[in-house]
Image (cartoon, rainbow, N blue to C red; front, side, top):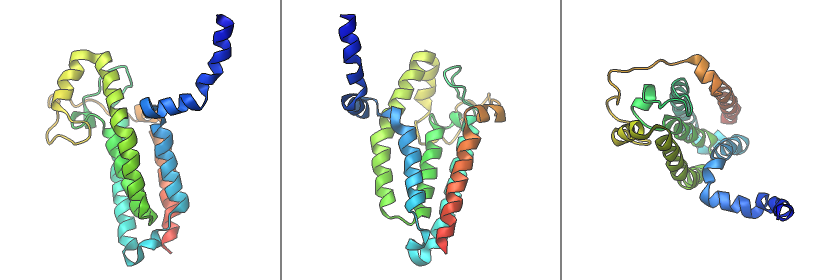
Length: 203
């Protein structure tokens, strides 16, 4: 029996496993797909395709990218993955601020790329990956933090921010070291480099 299991194991790494994960565990691919999409827009993008609106749309994209980067930087300095429930900083307004930042950054690249179909592709990616990812992460947090998570979830939406903070009496501390540990500075450097590359397409 043990030999049979060893012989069967490699099949679990094949196409059927990939197809199963894309249907039931697509959250595993969200980062790869999201970053890959931005690279595609950078490689194929040509901001001048927007014509006379190109400069305005490009700089609007820079504005959205800056906002998204700042939100991600803010959030990554507060979150301590699986160690404590983050309900301060941006997590006091929305449960998944990193994903809010992701959407703003993706919108920025769609605007800056000059590719009309990028908006359609973005909508498909968002619909296909984010609902399941959010549900999975909420399930993990619920299992780890129980009633604390339930109280926070009841008052805080997934992606649409509250107007007032959930934790009025607790501000929390933002940590650059924590942000660095979460890899955010490297992500920012890559995003800035990609937008800089697109900037030359305005000419």
